[in-house]
Length: 167
Image 1 (cartoon, one colour):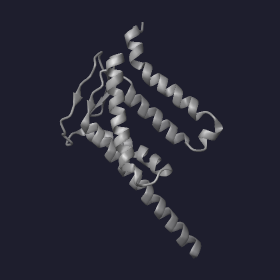
Image 2 (tube, helix red, strand yellow; image 1 turned 180 degrees about the horizontal axis):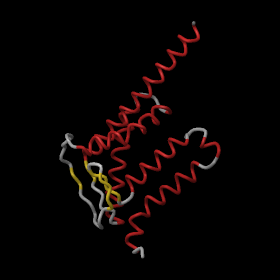
Image 3 (tube, rainbow, N blue to C red; image 1 turned 135 degrees about the vertical axis):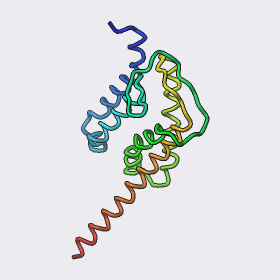
Image 4 (cartoon, rainbow, N blue to C red; image 1 turned 90 degrees about the horizontal axis):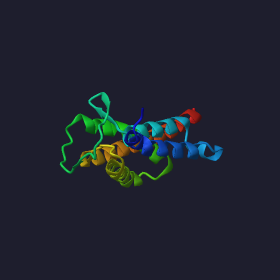
């Protein structure tokens, strides 16, 4: 039987998933957000806003708790790479719709926003997620990498199309 406290720990992620789905369903929104982008956002939602913990390829459910906050910068750990990989597609999605200069600001806002929300819901609903400055930095790096890859890929695609039409 599911305890009330266990349900509450999953509540924020479920609400966010329902809101994201409700936003995606109208036809005019599906034109701007492709299925792979929607599935990516749903995956990030589950990984970030539920009591799941991924540590060095292991997935577990966190015990009840309020988590911790760390301001110690230590970027040479595997979780930093996980956070970079997690946000590279988000950087591409942002670059697709926003100017290149906004990537740094977007990366910091995304990273800071995720960590702040994790802190709040950890304390409200015992999610037991950590809020870490390394995650903010890694998320910003991932967003910037994804954005740069998208912008460079778009320019290369445009150049190749021009070359191919010229022949």
